[in-house]
Structure formats: C-alpha cells, structure tokens
Length: 168
Length: 197
Image 1 (cartoon, helix red, strand yellow):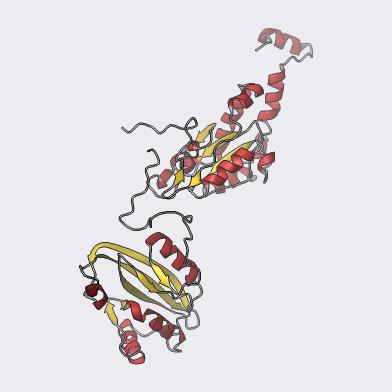
Image 2: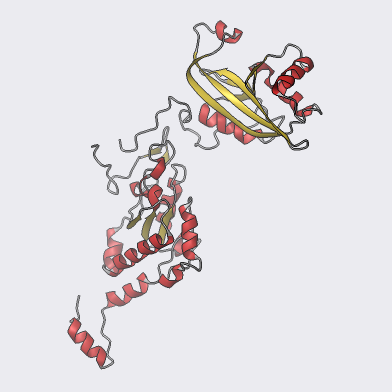
C-alpha cells in the first residue's frame, strides 16, 4: 500500500535529511540537486519499491518566474520562465502508484541529473525531452536527439518555437 | 486513334478483332499495376484492408505489392510524410522503373492534413514528386482507394506509353535535412506554393 503524498514527503525527509521537497496537491516538487538521491531512495527502499518509471516528460512555462531559489538569485536578473520535468513512478512488485515527481528548472538553462542509471527505461524518454524541450540530463549515457535529425536547430515543443514556413 | 467504331463492331460480328498497339499495351498495363509495398501511417491500414479479401484489390489486378521499388509501377503514398521520411520516399520513387505513377492517399500525403501547422510534417508529397491521383479522406475508405485506382487506370488508358515516359525527369532531387526543415522546401518545376489569400 502506497503512503499518501503527505506521508511520503515526511518519510523522505526523515530518510534524507536536508532534502528540498514541497507538496502541491498530489505532486511532490523536488529540488533539482536532490532528484537523484530521492529517486534512488524511492526505488531501493522496500516500502516504496517504485521500480517502474512509466513516464518522463517536461512542461514549458514561458512567462512564469522561478521561485526565489539561491541558484536563480545568484545569476543576476530574475530569469523569466521555468521548465518542469515530470516523473510518474509505479511499483510493479507491489502494484501501486503513481507517485508524481516534478523538478522546477530555469528555462534559460535547464539542467538536471539523469535518472537513466536508476531506471534504464528513462534513456529514450530523456533523449526525447532533450530533443524537444532542450533539457540537459547530466550523467545520461548517450544524450543526443532522438526524433529530429542531428543538425536541427531549436526545440520544437517549447512554446516560443516558430516552425518554418514551407511555402516561403 | 485509328479504327472506325462502326467498322470495328461489324468486324467483331464476323469474329475479327481490330485494335491498336497502344490500346493493347494500355489494356495490359492498366490491369496489372503493381504497387510498392510500404505504408507510412493509418492510411496504410486502409490500404491493407483494400488488399484483403473483402474489398479485394486483386479484382483490379493490383494485388501484387512489391517489396522492391525496381519491380513496382505505382507508389501509394499512404499516410503522413514526415520531414525525416520524405528523402527516403523521394529516393524510392527515383528507384522505380518507368513508367511509374503516384497516388497520394489521404489528407496527410496530399497537404499535411491535421499536421499542416506542425514542425515535422511535409505539407504534401507533391512538393518533391509528381502525383497522378489525389484521394481525399482521413483516412480514405477502401472504396475511396479503389476509386483512385480506377481513375489511374483511366489515365493510363488515355495516353500512349511513349508520351508517359517522355514527360518525366530521370530523377527528382532528394531533399536534405536543414536547420529548421528540408532544403529545398519544394522542388521548383514540380510544385509552386499557392499565393497567400
């Protein structure tokens, strides 16, 4: 039986002291630096057993400002826009889920740790997010475009992407 | 061309059949159009249904889908042509032996269809290769594809083989991958974009 999001947050804070977690509804927002540790804990702890990454995607919020995080304030002017990476986790062994994790990243330079070493199935999904949203996954074994061809410029799923005019 | 219809029917009553070389060749050509066996999207499912027993494309002599472009007469572009796939489609067309024909099956192959404003779909295969018959629909029904095939047969019967071969270029340029799409965006001489409203 999966603990409620509230209990999950408290359990994680106990297991990983100093971890940055905020709960919004059923979504657990994880600090970008803590993502790998939280994911590893969720997979390896017997009571969570979240062995299956069902979905990994991103959401582009071009006009929203990042919350006042120390990284954002040091980079000078407040950067407009944020990029969320979304993770949906299930447990095949214990037949529960989903646990929804999100990471808020600055839109101008979205970098987050790869979860491919934890769930092998993340490899292609991270490549897709890298291709279409331009999020860089540190520690990914083979990060290159997967749908568009090498040499393609831009990230088409970003809201400000303008497709070419084929009639021009 | 040639034989007077009245005389022809008189002769037929006596057991003498008169025809022209073109009519004889076109009769054979139009009733054994071998399509190239490939599908790009959901239109391909309708194409498969057309080839199966209920609709039975064999009634029109087109049941032999060839897996090699060298042995095919007809390219049925069945589905969405993505920018990534378009060079391969043009290359396959170039590899087909003359005389060869193209059916653009469905809204996607004709104009990009529901993906018209997208970033990754070609707005019609007719930008790079000459299309003989366009079939509307999303996807067209098997009946629609058979209607398109019959139109193509009429087209083949109406022209002599020499004319057909002479009208085509030897090879059509294969587009390359550019920074934001295919380069060139269309082959001039094959396609001209419509003027804006």
